[in-house]
Amino acid sequence: MGIDRILEAGLVSVIAGLLGSLLGLGGGLFVTPMLTGPLGVSIHRAVAASIIAVIATSSAGSTGYLKRNLPNVRLGMLLEAGTVIGAMAGTLVGTSLSARVLSGIFAVLLVGTGVSLARRPAEHAVTPDPLANRLGLSADNPVAHVWAGLALAVFAGIVSGLLGVGGGLILVPAMVVLMGVPIKVATATSTFMIGITGVASAVIQLSRGAVDPVLAAPVVLGIFIGAILGPRVSPLISSRLLQMMFLLAIGLSTVEMVGKAVA
Amino acid sequence: MLKQPVPTTEPLPGASPSATLGRVLGAGAILSVGTVALSLVIVLVQGTHAGQGLTPEQIWKALRGGKAAGVAGCGLILLCATPLAREVVALVLFARRGERAIAALAALVLALVALSLGLGLHS
Image (cartoon, rainbow over all chains, first blue to last red; front, side, top):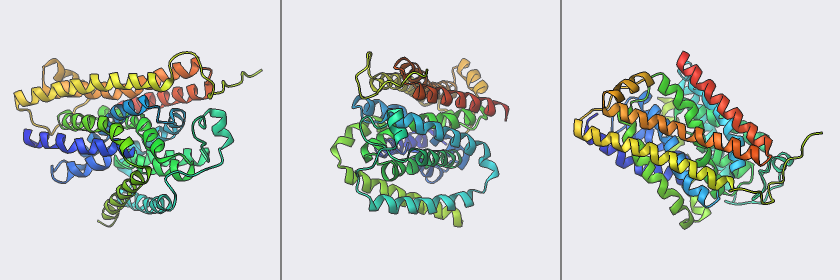
């Protein structure tokens, strides 16, 4: 890949970083197809770069969100324990599992998630889980169904480790629909926590020599610029619009996963 | 007798966890992305092409040789260290506030990442 393509990767990554930090998705959803499609990078190199991109989105995006005290830090720290376990498992068994089967399962889950999210208002009242109260998770907003949310966080981590995308696609709807977290808090919390999930996968990829630093560099720089814009754009858009954008991302991802499953 | 957790709705002494964690992430992001940006300048000067994955040992060797891939790899390692630094600071902050369950979660995550690194190096 020459210099022109490297610069191209950086420019497209700006948009990926903006959308990734706004939606709590980390940018991997957008980076992987961009690298494998128009830029012709192999899927393994693209997944490794997109995992690095997730860390960049999280670190840059969270800085702005934390200034506004938007993420539920304690909830993020609980769920990230689950996603790290899942990401480790996903990264380690990635080569021994059928990508077609996993893509199919993920597509079905995404359809269910999308329908649930579409039927729910962006913010709705819930009965707080006693465990959430004990852990201080409900200090700003009541949080419900902590154990179910944690189980989904483990699954989100597995998918993230296997495909380099998808963690936030499960986490954000799980927080909104299941745990009753307002969507803007959910996307900010997801942005806060996905960085450490990315690290769990990235250290394995780096140790194996799977990361091409010259390929990842423009992606990281572009993602950083886009991700610092996310928290500035977030107050300008309504919760409903954010929910619609998230549903669009779920739809695009479902099409991609169905494509992989039937290929 | 077990110590009761401190109610989180009451103000506690010291800076808020959000502000402190935000500063740690911001500093790490600027340092790592600055290093990555420097590597891109070297790419433009040297005309380096992408296409080769590097292990940490190869990154170190390239860095000593002043190659763009080494500088970029160094930036990526700093980037990976940023959420870890945030986790260490969170562990200390929440332990000081008496929120032992949250501090224990931070310790668990750090232990898992250390295990992840060990598995990666030995696979």
